[in-house]
Length: 173
Image 1 (cartoon, helix red, strand yellow):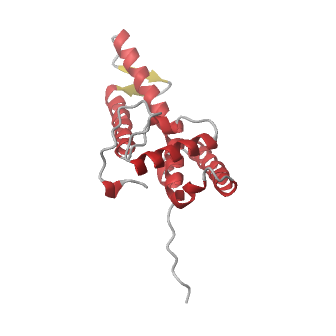
Image 2 (cartoon, rainbow, N blue to C red):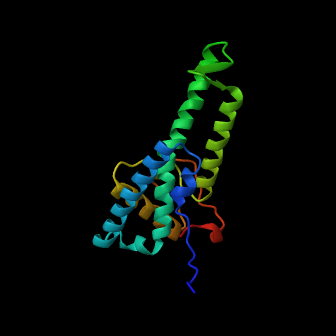
Image 3 (spheres, rainbow, N blue to C red):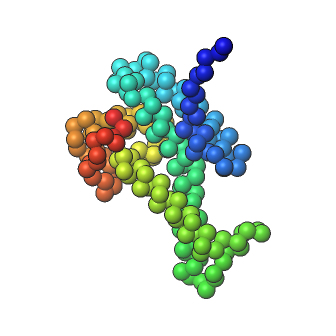
C-alpha cells in the first residue's frame, strides 16, 4: 500500500487561479526562475544565510510581489484611469472594444486592491518590499523586514504609514 503524501499547493498557483492562462503562465515561470535564483543565493551567500530558516516566508513574499507587479498594479491603473475619465467627462461607462468598464466594476477592482493592501499591511509587507528589479534586492528587503520584526521596530527604509503593532502569533518570522 502506498503512503499518502501531503502535497501543498504552491502559493503562486493559489494566486494565479482563475487568471487567463497566458498571464498565469508568465507569473508561474517568473516565480520558478526567481525561486531558483533565491535558492542559489541562499546557498552561496553568507549575508543571506539567515533567511534559510524562513524560506517559506521568502517564497510567500516572492509570490505576493509577482502578483502585485503583474495584477494589482494593473488593476490600480485601471481604477485610476476610470477615475480620470469620470472626473473630466460625463461618461458613466468606458467602452474598451466590446468591454464596458462601469463604476460597479471599478468598485470591484478597488475592493480587490484594498483587500490585498489590508492583507499585506497586516503583516507589515508594504509596497516597498514589492519594488525591486533583481532578486537579490528582494532578499535584502526581506532580510531588513526580518530584522525589523526581531528588533521590534519599523523598517526605516519603508516610507509607508505602517506601524509594527501586530499580534506576535501572526508574525511571519
